[in-house]
Image: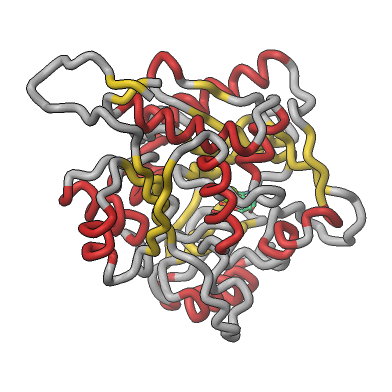
Length: 345
Ligand SMILES: Nc1ncnc2c1ncn2[C@@H]1O[C@H](COP(=O)(O)OP(=O)(O)O)[C@@H](O)[C@H]1O
Ligand SMILES: [Mg+2]
């Protein structure tokens, strides 16, 4: 690394950056809900990120984002945080760590707290993107049991927690074919996961995910990857559910680039880029799509903090399909953050 030319009065550091890896890890609480900790990272992922940066000679410090984080940050003297912290609770949880880092004036990789919060609230994000004319399935949000009704939605309807990720709260049976089933599934979700429930028209068809890396002119969009559902289950609906993600080797194949016409691939990458920019995302993200049987592209959700578990998460898989190994991907995310903040290799 070398110092970028000084362009203003802010003194830029003249040493190699010390990188804090900021995370919330799984606790293995063995609770009654099997996917309760689905969003948190395992220490294997944290170590994989550390080892990746280590292979480029970057010094790292591991910092768990708990209540003692402010003291730990004061002692660690990091130059930049590699943030993968999911936060502890509430729909603003992914903002906890970025907001603290902003308060302390510590730069960090990835999107800011506003982008993270908007993306985590699926209904809010869909509403925002509709104003950019990005097609997304019609949906309703239920805050309590008394709210649950069809309200103009066309069945089948998928039921999912409004502000979770990693398919938390998306079991294999999560699609309602009438109002009775909708009440049962949405009621169950409200009880188990507490927060608002999103009921969304189910888009039959194919599923794709698109990875983005970098910023501005240097933004790179990886070719869409198709999640191809094997025909080895008797289920009526093809869902990338919690169970399927846990046992992906048995249920899905990944095809990258996905079999698409040039126009379809272009529409997907262009839409992913528009979503990324509309939300003001930074450094990296992953966007999920469904392509309906009649050829319409639907935005499902964006993950501005996509999982980085090697050999499991879709984002590193996407990069690998494009010839970018895990170590290089992690280093590139860091570099995207560093150059945004004024460092240059
Ligand atoms: N409207 C929908 N139509 C069809 N399938 C959907 C729809 N919404 C979600 N799914 C399925 O459920 C999976 C998880 O939903 P998603 O909104 O991406 O939640 P998460 O944030 O947990 O990944 C998707 O990958 C897809 O397979
Ligand atoms: Mg998803």
